[in-house]
Image (cartoon, rainbow, N blue to C red; front, side, top):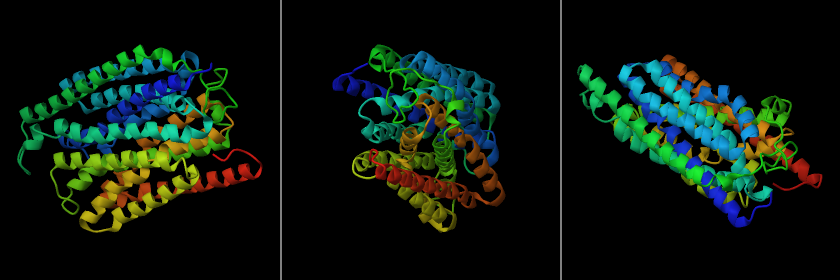
Length: 431
């Protein structure tokens, strides 16, 4: 189906609103972790089950999500995903009313299941809405608005989740049942606000659904652009592609690292040997971490029109690894600033890994996208590992986990650059 440039731009703007929304919702979990740790008196390993429940949805739902997108198409899959997210938010008030940590985890899993389907649909859709050689630019620009959501969420959510209730109690004083109930009501209110956002977004997407009537990319269209047929959506197809597997591993490590650092950030900045600030203020400062990613994505979207995507990826990953080493060993506030700075270099990693993999994968875009979104389960696994290391050896030492992960991502970027050099030498495209 031929689409006018104006129609493609309108569709791209509509899809970009989805990136903003799921970024905002996903990062709301960061101050929620600090709240859960205090309300339920949990260890780092226990409270990281919050991220485990959220990101495990990617491992479980990506397979059926890819098949759903292949069967229903992008627009209807997006609407179904928003409906699932709304149901998860409406489950949360029941969970907070009962006051059980496990039921809050169920709510997060349902919300993340909807976000998983949303990502399986929206990432290749954003990449497909224009010329193949600018797919890196389009997806990185959409991810920049995703980062706008992640930058706003910690500040707004901390104001609700980490204020009043048990957080108004002086250090060392006893917490009453009424104060604990007040903090749980704040969590309830936060989820209901997110539900309202999703409902408004669903109405908007319904109104522009015809603009999103783009065929799901078929096999052989490795650039991520829409093909003439739906193609297979089975992730099994992607498992036969070495580059799909390498890209999946890179996404696994990147998301795991980004989530681990963001999840621990509030408690890390709160430490007396870092910034020593109250939890509510520390939660608001997490916006600087995600705001760095937002700035980096806007800058990166411009740089990617001039620089090789694989080179920029390798460079950013190497700098992020160096910063994680500084967090583990540097004294005082310098470690806090180093932790916040990692967000700037995280900025272009996800979209570049995603599009580099779509370009090189021998599987269909639907199958490859499904595998890559399934790999986001790294956000469930690495935070648990970081939590166990933090409990055993201290929170600073735990930053060695993302440091190793970033070095592996750097190696992926170098390998992708070499593959590009071979392709150019053979007379292929230069992107």
